[in-house]
Length: 472
Image (cartoon, rainbow, N blue to C red; front, side, top):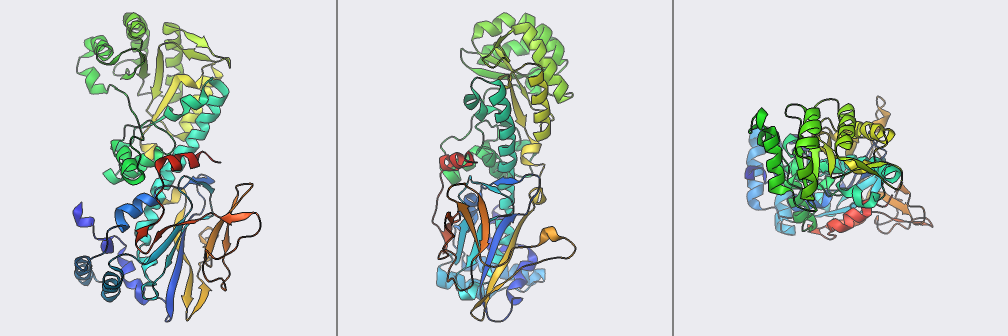
């Protein structure tokens, strides 16, 4: 959508008038991003680097200013043509901002400053506010990474309890099925990439490409050959066994994995008769692991029943922790999957004596789409302004909703060197810059400058992001 590429039009309409609304004498502003709470008490910070590279790296041009001027003239808003032309002429189109952020992949409690944005040209004090609309979309990759991370903790707990190899199993236990259920290709890219911070299984190609483009990951996610209903039902109801056999012929080799959706007509008959009898010897001789996919019914009940029936057909081995691991076959559940149903399914199969090794999950809409900015109550707010040479606190404290009270002053996020805890503090007005603030003993600055004067100054690799997300 090249018609959306003008940064000056990547904003809310009312932002165009805000440069006229600050007090006279304002020459610098300070904004911050935080999660003000929400469904989870910790968030995984991720995605700012992608937004900066994609949207802020290209210099603003006079042609961009011309287009925005003409648009807002017709749209009914005043436009700061002179301010933007000065950015082109004085700064070469590079945005005079300083953006500091917690390192990507960091797991940070809510109610902390994750990002700060400062203007650094006295005549462009209005610029951080203008970019709020764009930068606050950071909520989406952070929220996806957060949902995925919390599911990972659930899976880890059950693997630790029931598996002999939890670390080996965990990276492929939650597979991204969400590409078709999101609102745009960009959402699939950002959300799919955010999930890959925590796991390595995905069918969302856009997310893998985004991890390569923005974080230098040659191949961040993996998949396996898998059937869909059309590739099974096109053989006809009486040809279901032939369709299953074709999957074995095409893909079942020693040491490989393949997934076959098996509920087109009757999942239990497919397991008991087709897989468990007709094709059983072919599955075993192939040396492959066949992953059976149910795709309808009550997920908790269906998964349990499928495991019991596969166990009856193929047998199982009791591992070192006393739980059954199926021979030759596994399950993947991709219907009705969300954080709550995953926990319920794992609780049921664990109580029935089955290891979490037997099961993987595919999560689609609940992973990439069933969320909004209020899931973690994200906000980007101004907390300080320099007016007539003095820093003043800027904040809101609505009597009707204390949860929307914003932080005040220039903010620094500190992390305790020993305990790893975080706290957001206000930098005293007499300290010239946030970086010059000296934290109390035992504490260190947690935010790093990632963008300054139109340049990315810290480029995180995907490996660094993943490693950091494992530090709790």
